[in-house]
Length: 365
Image (cartoon, rainbow, N blue to C red; front, side):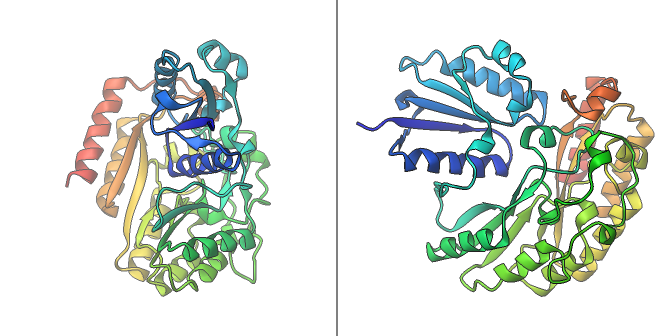
């Protein structure tokens, strides 16, 4: 009787796509996917570590799983592995194996449970080094898949009846641009000035590679929708706006994280744009793409955030009119520049109040 596996997935869409590839790797070796963890010989926990609460949920789950009567092998993977191994083994002595997510790779066809929609990762890792974020430490530096490989995967998917694809990357619109000089960012320096985009990207057919990729994918007439996430404001260039405007098949729901409306806090976050630049970008998008609906991510309570800083975010929210916002209270993450540079000095009750103000303003209007 074949061995069985079960996967728990925490976090973002990229983690969901990773879990599909993990499942594909197991299935290729003749394993079966268990319907319940109680049936599994091995359980894989694909973790998120964007906030401490995500770590805590994984720890709680592992504790429960270790009590299962079938005594499965517990394997931890995902972003939580950015922690030192000594920390993990001390925190989670009940875990049998720690396996870096990059060992799965793209060698196995994802085991997708939908036929009409598919997550399609086009890059892994990140070169942005926002001061609060663990992604460059957890997933490494940015690495793009070849355009040929992505197109071949989409060609296979449409042949299987797929109508909607979502292209994934930690900074999806910087696809193909990982040769950017990031030495200062890698050192975690705060407040560096962002070079002009056109001074730092390598063109492909005189266009940004992500735009060229979209132009190739819209040629698949079987596709009804092409979505992508997540975009960074500093890489949402005019050519990208144009290709969306010219192709109705490309999703009008655009997720463009802002994180804060305060220029001072944005610099401390290592986000290389200002209040005015973000607002101008949104206004440009709305003019060129009238049906665009823009969502965002916001962090409240970043270290040293004053009431004035917070009110700048409120002001930006009123000016932009986001369709939806994913709001988080700042959580210090080891190894990040913010963790090394600042104390988490905003009281929880202040963070909670600011969270509810923005949530009510944006998500319950």
